[in-house]
Image 1: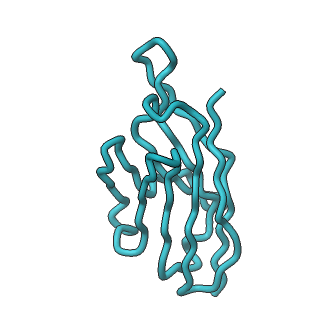
Image 2 (image 1 turned 90 degrees about the vertical axis):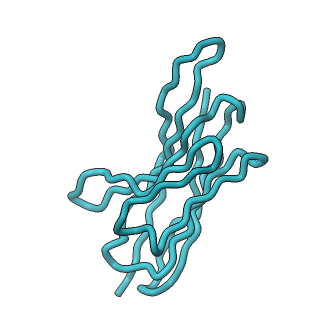
Length: 121
């Protein structure tokens, strides 16, 4: 069973930085695009950034100057570096991966359990 385990969340003051990690327990060759989403209290889940299986990154426009997504293929891990954090960045951050089912060309989305980031003013 494929699992995504996030870490790195916590409490930080405005202007600070955090780096989130997401480790994937799956055959690295079966993983396609990986992504970070976030969900603030009372809000819908929104896309933060994606990174393809060849390392191409895309961002939500409002976040691209402060957030950086990266991927370590050897460690099967995706990261989200968050700088200049603001109180409005407070949310649960979720990792997401497209994983190919063994013996097929069918991909399914797998989600992590989420990690809470709280930015104090």
